[in-house]
Image (cartoon, rainbow, N blue to C red):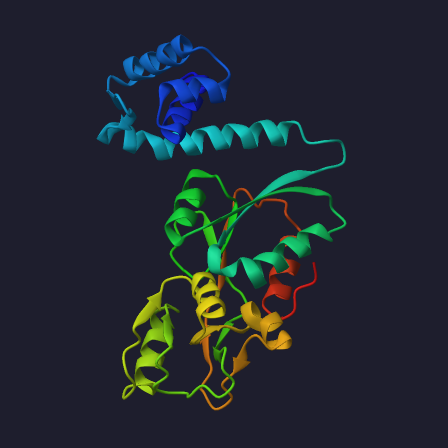
Length: 285
């Protein structure tokens, strides 16, 4: 399959128009049309419905999109790795769950950066679903995550636990019945422990599936929430946030999933994993 056809397909998806796709790719509109027709003929499927307002993906086009993104990116990675400069031994593709970028994700990058072995690094941040897809497709070689689901050929390593603490913009915020309290998804175990301890408390009026987003909201609008300590350490030091001292602390397990085939010969990885098993609330950039 012609890679330029897939790149053109993705350009149409991203711009919503064959005309804008041609401008982005710096080719004529007739070239874009020809590439799209070639791809549709090859697949035997219509990928776009063309309207006056632009091009809309068909159901088949939606299915192709995620594969096209992976294939194009894998090609980019292959081209990057085969063109590595002299002295650089390998390209390491790292995935990190979005809420773990600050902390374990950054610590992992710092560890690799300070290795005596020169490596090239490609880092990706996404959701649990993204990471699972990227690992399976080979887009990433390893992933820092909260989740334990693995397949054959992948190994799961435990890392340092995340400590979840109750923090507030108001130092006098109550531990219970804070009208500005927001609930932050922290995994199944946290959900059970939180429900048990706060069984008689009101239900939060707002909830977030992302600790990063919850932190942004609390800093902007005020309130309290259970958040990872490593994520709020600088805000505690600056006085923008305060710990509610009498509130219980909870923990959340974190993991590294490694593609064992991709990691063959990575003698440096076990020692990094050992260091990432130790809590470290401060990040050195």
